[in-house]
Image 1 (cartoon, rainbow, N blue to C red):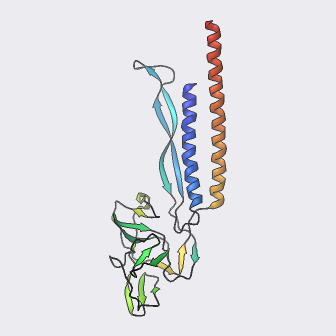
Image 2 (image 1 turned 60 degrees about the vertical axis):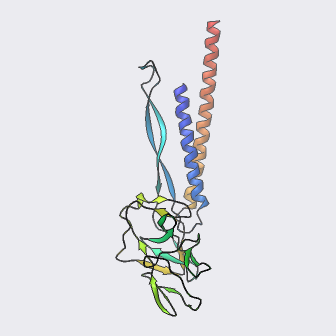
Image 3 (image 1 turned 30 degrees about the horizontal axis):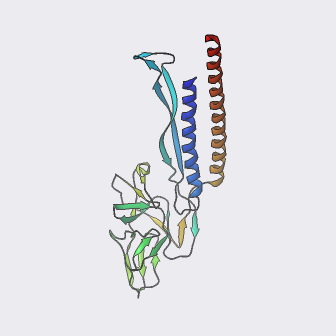
Length: 246
């Protein structure tokens, strides 16, 4: 019976983590370029109870264990902002940005200019253009970003956004501020399609996530009820044993 309670508790822990993942998805449903996440579970086999290295009872106990966090890297819908510094990627690709820890990658193309006229992300990280940051002078106007990432002003072509692609996006590691890092080197795509004055919405499906949240909450409640009943059964069994011993 103790093993049954432990198994149920492991399920509760897994459900709490899954609920936190779904809640995070819903919290970021309006975050530009956010990618929905899903917790993956597996059966974790543990040796049964033993005493002096001699197994007693069941030889194996099957627990619930979360193994990894999977991300849906499909594109979100595009939203028009009419902000000339906003850029969305159609299809595959990632914007490259500079951070104190090195290059990082994002789908959030909501860019702005800092006090030095440098093109930066909403978190203040410089956007990589032709291998480095790009700054505009006060005299430059009419900033345009072509579909291939070429940036121009009234003074001519200024550079090209450094778009990165990866053989396996699943290896990308999530960091703060909607940024990702990679242990593998990024590649430059042969073709890229960008849209100026637009940003990519989150790919979170609110109804799907709300439905999943309700299902998880119900499963958690059922498990909690089962644990309570198992605990009561154990208490009753101990009470009966005490009566017999008396």
